[in-house]
Length: 152
Image (cartoon, rainbow, N blue to C red; front, side, top):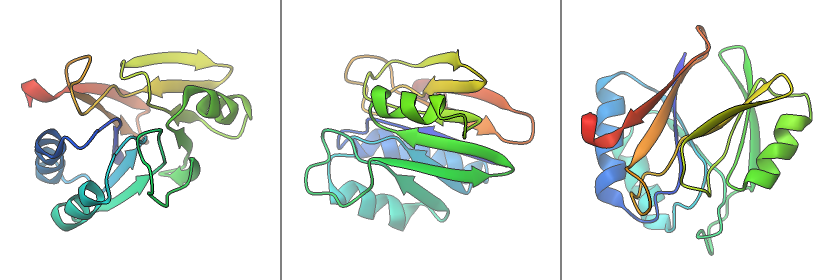
């Protein structure tokens, strides 16, 4: 199963909508959002626009949003954890329970290994510090791909 991982939208609906449109064209049905959505309006718009399932975790810019700080799921036979903050994500990675852990907050795309766990930041949707990016992960092939928004 192919899933999309996004983070740090910071109310940039234009960029997030472009990603959602691309994902629907690719038949993607699952998004993990690593926080800093920044408003309920972004969540509501995404739910209207995207026909699949979107899971969210809370970031430091998500004041008043009732979403959990971390989440652990099994998708396509892979144990996946995600959080906004690197320190919370690191705990998920070091727990030994997850195959892959995603996180946000730094806005910088990154991948490294923490024990047997892949530890990944998909970058930022907002384009505040770096070019807007997100990640695609295929649970069947274990392939991870960074997507640059301007190249879609």
